[in-house]
Length: 182
Image 1 (spheres, rainbow, N blue to C red):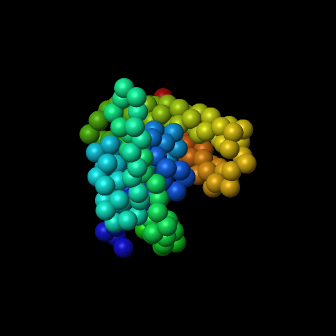
Image 2 (image 1 turned 60 degrees about the vertical axis):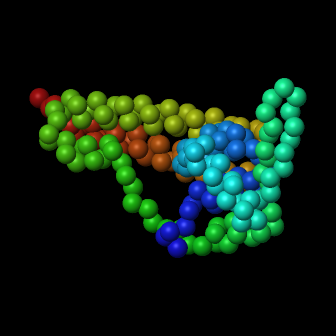
């Protein structure tokens, strides 16, 4: 189970929403799952070719006036079946790779001011993320509330909100430990 290409399932999942081109998939990632999952064009197009070869997606050509042809991919019944099968599998635990924690672990090799600077940048980033999650929640609650997927999207956004809030609190507590005391 550990050797499965999760990128394949991310693309299948996106195609389950609607048929899309590789460019559309990249834009959809940036606007939705990009906060917790990324795929580059270099990953997307080979996966799309593989999905078509395996019969999990179809590819149609849309001719465009004065522009290159646009290739649109759609999920097949077999693709939906494979996606649902993967969605039902238990979630694998992932070991987090967190550069901030790695640097703090070896923080004695830096000055406390350097450690604090890292924490402040991370805090700013979390505050920005929190704002983005609030904006996403507003979009879901005003434009997509009628969709059956909205409840699931809200739960993922809620995770992001709660996580960013917890990380900001952690930054504040950790910074208070590292700040010079008279």
